Image 1 (cartoon, one colour):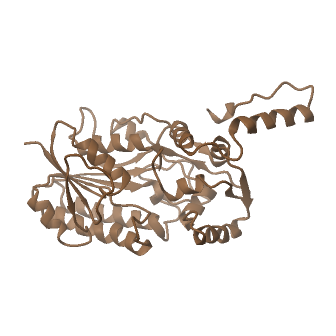
Image 2: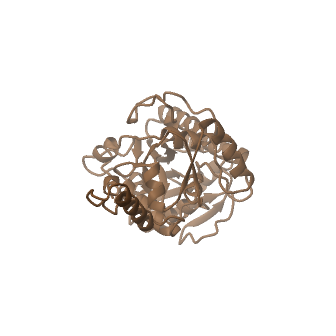
Image 3: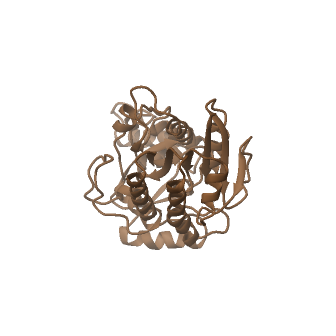
Length: 356
């Protein structure tokens, strides 16, 4: 008998991708895809069950399908369909509580994987240069998805104490990018002109959507030799990018705004439906965030195929040229440098200092 894997959040893009991929693994016998709404994409041979994880009925789903592995991907910062922030928070927090309660009652469940986020560390001016999995946040998130993620992880730790026989893995993903990923950050990066916080150039990390699927597959299985796939792990591509580098590579002009005015800009963008410029995103775009991935590589045994820069490049290629295509911007910089210092050596026309 192979594994019976239940996946929440199957109607979302990454959830659907994972459902289609995990069912091809030879050790998986059946996949049960769960969501409160019908998915708009194919789920292959998986059995779709329309169920709201906020309801106690999720326990019946686990029992009836004899589930032994649960992959909880329905922890997110954006609503699906007509749902608003209240619905998202209920699904994240109350839904997780109900799902964990169902797992606790199930004698068959032996592995639990939970999608979390590096948002749990927050973004503050006195943050450490690099967060490890055990570094406490200088300033705990006070609202939004980041606060949800902190609460979800607290409930998961409680479940792990009550069911020590279950292998529990929490994956804290950096900002996920890829050709088809949609999030508040990708919406911001797709703006024709990017508002930035005057005087700040935050460091950012990204993880490619393909690597997200690969690491989820890894932790849903039995651990490889000399590795351990239970615990909490940061997941991010190697390296960092500054926000200014991101803007140049997208060809997007930036408009520096005084920090107190950023909230007004965010409200205006939300009003016209351009992007959800939430407070947690403003803090990220002010102070940035970098996490250590040593545990991911040395304990989990996972090495992403894409670096932070490569993940961003794939995302940028899917968005098309901005108002200032990088090659035109580089040419303008060269011409300006030549006029200012005609006797100086020519300036390279690529972002060599960006690590490109």
